[in-house]
Image (cartoon, rainbow, N blue to C red; front, side):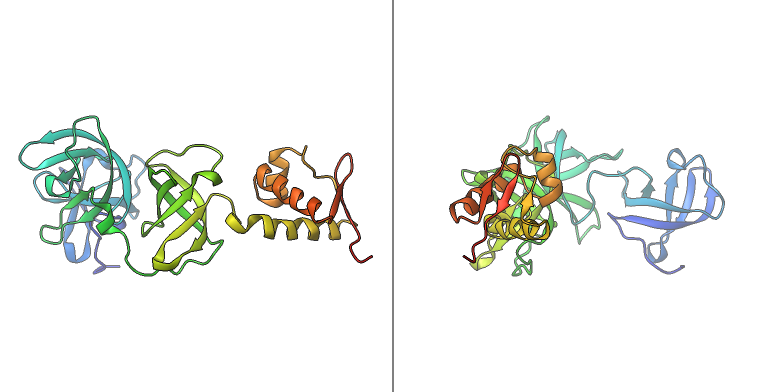
Length: 285
């Protein structure tokens, strides 16, 4: 639709206005025509096709489009490698496009060298409309009280390891913590994982989990197991020897969590172990 504006630093679906020697000119709405250089034109392009492109400024400050995909877009966080340092302006990061991304000195937490990797937020400089990186990530996280509910599935981006666990960015917006005692394996900075909100504490602190039921898992999981036993005539073929895959498929939790829940039910005299499987005990007597 003519007049809708292309967004700098994001992927856009744009119509072709005309072809010229340097490439195709696309309709950027209020931003005017945007050049897609010839080397990025898809080979199977048909005349009426719209193109999925990323819009940014080239080294001469002109708006250009590319069909390449950056490692992250404006508003997102990324773990990027320093490919060069310019003493006058800052570090340049490889973000998957022909033109490297500038991380100005004023946006660095500590001096960087070529080969270092750094967690950055990608933003649009309001003054120049240039895309820039910032390693001062706290100022780009939301200060609003989070509206997550306990058990909500979320996308996580791992920032760093701490004595308690791993700091992670939730949905490109808030900071949360994954505790060591709730993890089966170490995580790495820049890793993207699916997780769950365990609880939102006072002052907006957020506890996270990679397991669906988090801290509450033993309580809620025991209920799930009892319900499954009741549906199945009081017997289940699951026990301490069941495979982790079978347990995850049936109950959506790790084997460790499952064994903890069985232990709790056994102590409460709700179940007994049969070989194989478990049996619900009649507690009405």
